Each structure stands twice: as structure tokens, then as C-alpha cells.
Amino acid sequence: MKPAPFAYLRPSTLEEALTALAGEQGAKVLAGGQSLVPLLSMRLAAPSMLIDINALPDLGHITCDAAGVRVGALARHAEVLASAEAASAQPLLALALSHVAHPTIRNRGTTVGSLVHADAAAEMPMVLRLLEGSVDVASVRGRRTIPAEELFAGPLESTLAHDEVAVEAFFPALPPGGGVAFQEIARRHGDYALVGVAALVETDGGEVTRARLGYVSVSDVPVVVDVTDALDDPAAKALADLEPADDIHATADYRAHLVRVLTPRVLADAVHHARQRTAQRNHA
Ligand code: FAD
Image 1 (cartoon, rainbow, N blue to C red):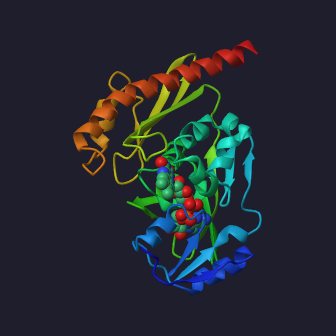
Image 2: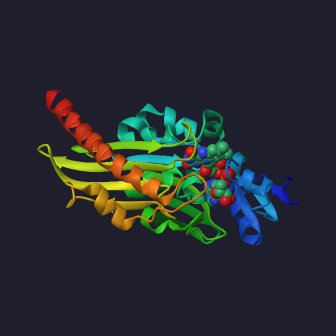
Image 3: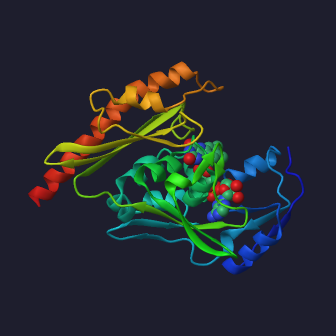
């Protein structure tokens, strides 16, 4: 199928992009196009105008400091994955990004685009939510920061207003004593996950003081479950909060089974990671 007709604008400043977006109710932002273009081609979306942000300056950055990693709207998945500084500040980024699609898609698709596309089957929205990160957005009305817990409104629905462009995502760094892990089951490596699970733990003296788990493809939105008080059976606690559903890829029962299998494994990996980091720091 071919897309429905649309106007195309490639602004060279953010102000120009924001003004155009505010003036055209049916306009959509085009970033890497790896989600939007298939939707256009299948006529599941028919915007009146595409505002291509790829020529905007100063949005391709990946900057790291003690607080965390800041990813600009034009940083590609592949660039974030290749950043040794980002992996060192927050190892969960690379762990999850290596499962996002295939290399050609990662070369073009943007991490920020994936966040605002808000697909519960995508890895990075869950990662942002688990890490308690945020997204900075701009419009002709000014700028604001949306915390991850307020970003995901429903299936493929973020809380960005129509006239807002996401300019940067912030992923907090992994603190000392922290550990992370990620695993997913997909039909082929790089396909969307049937179920994906990430764990973020904090430890003190080797003991777990906080444990949270994030789930991909098990509910309509990325879900995070606190299992600090349920370390003996974290999967049961998680399943009480999740809504596995049938679709063409897997049954609800199979998804629930994957949650039961992956949850304790990923949690154990994260605890091991935390203890390993602590041992390395004590040794240094
Ligand atoms: P686009 O496609 O350009 O845009 C997506 C949506 O976000 C559009 O509605 C657009 O208007 C909006 N948008 C984008 N950027 C902004 C912005 N800065 N401000 C405001 N709105 C914006 N993803 C995964 O996570 N895991 C996978 O396993 C996976 N597998 C894939 C397999 C295939 C075959 C394909 C084609 C894609 C796959 N993807 C997967 C999706 C891929 O990661 C996309 O790159 C990503 O979801 C969207 O990023 P993008 O830059 O391409 O956004």
C-alpha cells in the first residue's frame, strides 16, 4: 500500500518546527521513521503534514555525567548502544538496546522517538519508566519535563500535546550498590519481545534494599512492579499487577509462563551485578 498524500516540511530550526506543528492540527513529527513510515504505508496513520526534524541542529547529543545520560531527539539507537560512556553510567541502556529491532533499524530509529511512540512492546519506554527518567519537550508555549511515570497514557499513546516536540530524554545513572539485568524472549533476536523483563536493584552490604522490575509486552503500557517485599516469589507479585493478553504472537497463558520463568532469573542477575560492582569498587 502507499501512504495517503501529505505535505512535507524539513525545518532547519526548532522554532520553525514548533511554529509549523502548532499551526497544523493534522501534522506529525518525523524522526527516524522506523515506526511512523510503516504506519503511513499501511494507512494506519494519515497525517496532513510530516515535519521532518532530521535537519534540526543540536539534537544528536549523548551526554553523560554523574547524574545520568541525556539523549537528544536525533541520537539513533545504534549511537546510544555504541556509547561506552552511556553504558558505564547506566548499563541497562546497552543491555536493552541490543534487543531493539535489527541493526539497520537501529541505525535510523531514534531512542527518543521510541519513547514518545509509547509502544508497550518496545524496550526503551519500559527502561525509562524503570529508571524513573524523564523526557523534555518543547512547544511554542515553552518547555516542560515529563517524568516517565506520567509519559505513557495508553497503547501507543504518550502524554505529549499535539504541538510538542520531545527534545531530550534523561536516564538516571546506576548508583553505587545498584545492579541491573535484562532478558527477553522473542521469536528471533531483534523481533519485538513476546515478554521482556528488566530488573533494577539497590543493595547495601550485599543485601537487597530495593528491587523493581519492568515488563515489556505484558500490558498495554510499560509496567513497573516493586518487589522489595516479595523477594521470595517476585513473579507472583508481578503477575498480580500485569495483564498478559492473547494476540497473534502468543497466548496470555504463555506470556504469564514467561513472566514466571524470566522474573527470578533477571532478578538474580541484577543482584549478582550489584554485588560484583560493589566487590570491584572495594577492590579498587
Ligand atoms: P518515528 O517512526 O519517526 O516516529 C514514531 C512516532 O513518534 C511518530 O508518531 C512521531 O510523530 C513521533 N515522534 C518521533 N520523534 C518525536 C519527537 N522528537 N517529538 C515528538 N514526536 C516524535 N522497537 C523496539 O523498541 N523494539 C523492537 O524490537 C523493534 N523492532 C522493530 C522491527 C521493525 C521491523 C521495525 C520497522 C521497527 C522496530 N522497532 C522496534 C521500532 C524502532 O525502534 C523505531 O525506531 C522507534 O520505535 C521509533 O523511533 P523513530 O525515530 O523511528 O520514530
